[in-house]
Amino acid sequence: MEALENILNRVSGRNLSKPYPSKEEMDIVYKAALRAPDHAWLRPSSFIEVKEDGLDKLSEIFFNYGKSSPDISDEIAEKYKNAPYRAPMIIILVNSFKEHPKVPAIEQKLSTATAAQNIMLALNAMKYSCIWRTGKLAFNKSIQKSIGLNENQEIIGFIYVGTETGKKKQIPTLDIDEFVAYL
Ligand SMILES: Cc1cc2nc3c(=O)[nH]c(=O)nc-3n(C[C@H](O)[C@H](O)[C@H](O)COP(=O)(O)O)c2cc1C
Image 1: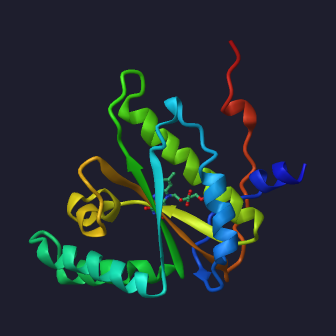
Image 2: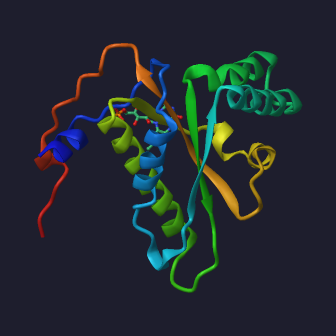
């Protein structure tokens, strides 16, 4: 029942401050992530944890990308620079593609997406809050290279992590019958 309550009450948090989870807590979070379904055991998911000085490094990577792109204004580059400071910890979701006769790229990415949901549920169970963000900064090849990824790797998203300082969002009531059909 507690496990179900955790799933039913999860909401994303946008006002994230310290404390972030300890190393011991994060070990459990990654263990949960690695329980994601994974066709042919290809192990497509890995994670880069960013906190403290790491946030400055990520900010610099984002800013340098913005500054070096002719179609991005100074104002937007400044916005990129500030982006990592929206939370005290970020987990970068990395997907590593492996050629496989039965497992196409989409299945490998979906596996990392389910790892992300396990991360968010584990954090929620520990009373931390988080939000999955993507956008231009996630899917950009030059940023992925600056972070150290190789040609077969890509960023699936960023999970911003911390303790929610704002009001917990109301969970909307949905009519289940609008979302489910029966054959
Ligand atoms: C793949 C993916 C990418 C997302 N990217 C963003 C994003 O870049 N910015 C954002 O504000 N929300 C983004 N979201 C939505 C939030 O993570 C969140 O799910 C949404 O605000 C709804 O809140 P809830 O999770 O509490 O229902 C993304 C969600 C998914 C699944």
